Amino acid sequence: MNIIEAQQWFDKIKEKIDEDNNNNSSKIQLQTYVVVTATSLVSAIVEYAKHKNIDLIVMEPTERRSILKKILLGKFASGVITYASCHVMVVK
Image (cartoon, rainbow, N blue to C red; front, side, top):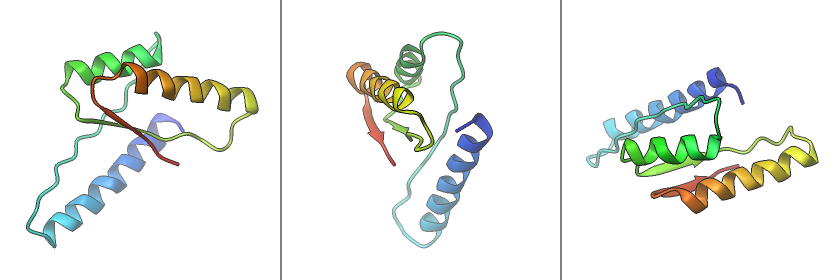
């Protein structure tokens, strides 16, 4: 998933939440961020979430990966889960 696809995915989620908020008395707030870094992705995401007091990190693995990339993605997600100070949800 590239940055544009990620932002489109987040925009669709926000639209759904806004639609639900209009039909419901309980309001859900959503802010999305796409983090791009030249350093360790795990540390960049963990530090960003800590600095911005993020409540939840949502990560989406990609099916179109080689076996090696799937193993690395598992290690990447595990790293974020291990070091993040907030909840982490990996969705498929």
